[in-house]
Length: 361
Image (tube, rainbow, N blue to C red):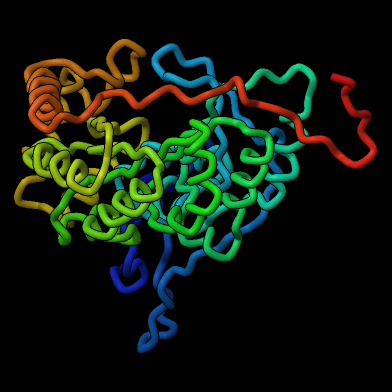
């Protein structure tokens, strides 16, 4: 029984980031493909994206992590066709009985009932409104959203309830929903974070093969901000010895495009993501793979990742100190804020339905 990941042929994973499809850590059995001599002149077709439907119960996911600044979120999809090799959401795919590798990129779960269920949750008498972040675990504006329109349905519900929402995305499809977002922004109900990992097209294509180009994402910042929607440029993730030197340039480009605030996140390699990332490095950037992983370990006290609440977001050591100092200097020079204006929760209201008893006052 073999328990190591098997590299997929490049022609089968064309346009994908992951090199392998590691065994799910909960599986008791492992397998290895074996060539049996058939179809010598005809290889297997490239991997295609499969989207299945799932029923979320509930739609609003809660968390109690002490180092995360929100207690709830919504994810219209599980898995993401943007295929970012660094995505910290990949390990969550094993909860579905799938792999965090190529499965995460090609075997997606959509939640078409999310808007309907969300409406029911917001109508609950016990519900207390707080800002709901969307896109924190998988891309809400990934390619499947163009036809599925689940995210748009969620926004329509939140808009009807005057509920505050924060969106994080790399997808330019968010521009489609400006007609909903702009009126919400005028009420102080929405903010958007656009993640820009690098300004170098070749590096972007390698790290995030199905994400719109960096230049196109900067255009999205421009279009959203032009519609009155407050936008944060997110330098995320910073990969030491690969993209860290671009921090100032990305912040400057974001500011020029209209971003009013900025943030940065350093690469996080939780659980099996560390091995998947190293495989990708050896193939995409073999000349600097050891250097990059050496820097990552310096940031995490000699490990690929430190899961402690006090360490996993802030990191440690000289690299971490330099990142923070450089970021602070850039914000001061550019006149960009660290925090965005607080969103309003006091406008929340439950829309009246046909048959409901109206209030007297």
